[in-house]
Length: 305
Figure: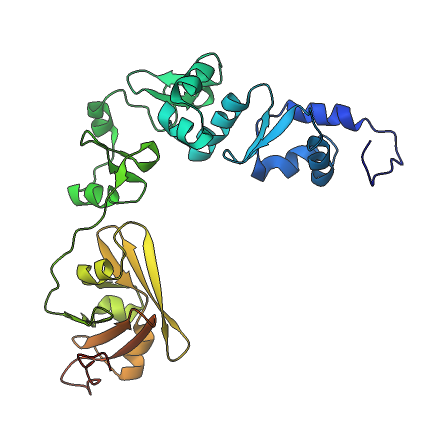
């Protein structure tokens, strides 16, 4: 009995809900389509599944519907599909709230999962013998197959928040327990001034990138001082004209949003310099000229006035 519903056609709702169980597990983002595929509305199905004893239950941690008889295995399938890469028992157990040994024992007896040889990781069998993104049995195989990239590119991307350093010193995914990288304090540099730990003033050169309207690379200390010490991160500052200045931490550098309009308004040319003053407490930004050939905005006083 469902309070508030009248049946004007003879339909077996229970049978259709049981048919929905054949599609389990079902991620939250796929639930509406799965319900309609068996001929029921999503809200009606949720109401039915809220009754005690239903075959499907919702797992908030895995963000999907799993079978009551196989909650750990179904939830693990949802997590691996969403992560799109293999994961260890510890990573799955940490999300699901079960001991790693229990998770491993459950997956071992389920043909949907495949234990990667030598990796101590689980992949979905549908990904193939080694799992998506794990076609290589050794580091040497991976190096041979990877397209040529620079050492700095690899180093920069290892600073992404998805990566980190494990307790034994190796690099790994932060989802597996590795500690993400935090930038150490860089040198201030001659083009940067700090006032009272709340005002930051720095200058950038007007070059071809600035004139084209591209984002502008800023001194490394700027991103660090603003707290952008992992990838990806950004911080927004308001301007008096109603626009915003966005500072973004990118692989290998920090940058600010386009300054092309400021260059035109100030009448600057290639070879000139822009001065950017940021108020970290008020989240405000001021931009002016910083070269002798143009009128320079008055510098911030030591008391921040």
